[in-house]
Length: 101
Image (cartoon, rainbow, N blue to C red; front, side, top):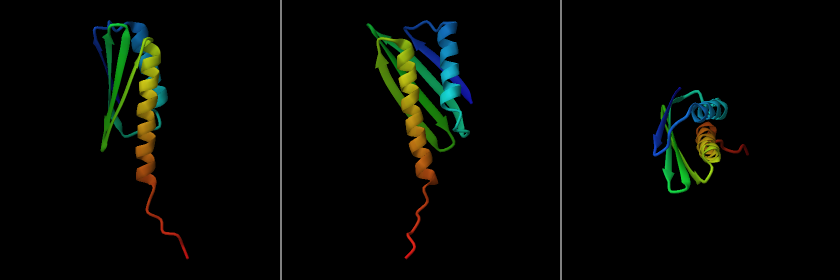
């Protein structure tokens, strides 16, 4: 799994980079088919915007969050992406089971 971090009007420090890698590894470890994770950090006036794009085989999920705190915005965006991935996973594993009479 490759992780790409892009900063728009934000300098990406080593602390931010470590936080992102640690959170991505911890949050998305249950999904082996993920090939690429892109995290876009943006600063608009006083709000940090974070966009998480997760791509893999037959997977495309986006999580967006805005906050005054960059780290909490990163965490919330990853939680949203993870929730969508779990929902996709459940849909794929739910087979059409017919109740037995």
